[in-house]
Amino acid sequence: MYKEVTTRLLILALIIISVAAFSFNSSFTGKSIINAPDLSIAELGINLGEKENYNNQFLSNKITAVVCNNHNSPIDRYKIRFVMNNRVYDGEKSNLEPKECTKVHTSFKPFMENIRYVEAYIVADPLNSIIEANENNNRFYKVLNLSLYSPNLKITDLKLIDYGSFEEDKLLVRICNTNKKIPIKRRFDVVISLGGVQRQFPYSGNINPNSCAVTYSSSLSYFGLTKKKEVNVKAVVDYANNVVESDEGDNFIYRTFTFR
Image (cartoon, rainbow, N blue to C red; front, top):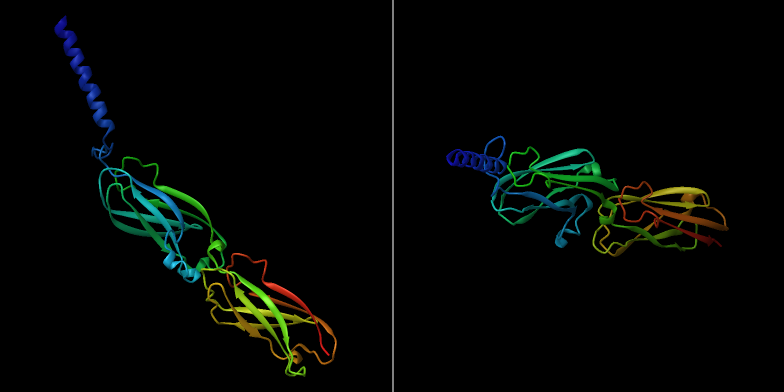
C-alpha cells in the first residue's frame, strides 16, 4: 500500500513539474522563455530628446519611438513598423541589450505636409518572429498634433510707403515667425485687399525662428486707386494654407489709410 501511494505521488510530482516546465516554453518551439527578451514601447512623439534637430524644416522632423528590452536576454535584430494615417513604414534595428532602450524613428513624408493631426502607432516585432517574455506590450498608439511642432506666421505691421503718387506708393507688410525654434522654408503668398480689390504677392524667402521679414506690394495704381480717399486695407499671409502652423488665427491684419 505504502509503495503504491509513493508511486502515485511520484507520478503526480512528475506531471506538475512537466506542466510547469511546459508553461515556461513556447508552445510552438519548446524554447524556454524564462530568460527571453521583452520588447516594449515606452513613448511615441516628435523629435524626442533631439533638441539639436528641432530647428529642422517641417518635413525633416522625425516621429520617434522609444523601444526597450525589459528582460534578461539580448536581441540581435528586430523589426519595427510605424503606421501613420493608415500608411505603413517598416524598418529593422539591431543589438538591443537587456534593460536597454533606444530611439527609432521615421521622417515625415510628403503626404503629411498639410496634415495637422495624425493617428500614429508603432509595433515592435510585427511578425512575432521573436519569442518574448511578454507579447502584450509591443504596441503604442498616440494622436500627434503636428502643428505644435510647426512654425507660426504672423503679420505684425502694415503701413504705407508714401512716395507722393499712386504710381509709386506701396504697402509694406511685416511678417514674423513667432516660433522660437522652427524656421519657415516653404513658399507662401501674401494677399492684400485694398478698397475691395484683391492682389496676391508671392514670398519665397526663408524666415528663421523668432525673426521677421518685410515684403512690399506693387504700386497702389495696381489696385486701381486713382484718387484721394479713405481706404480699408486687409493683408493675409499664407492665404492658401501652404504652411502648417501652430496658430492659424493670427495670419491677417486690418488698417485704414487716408490717401491725400
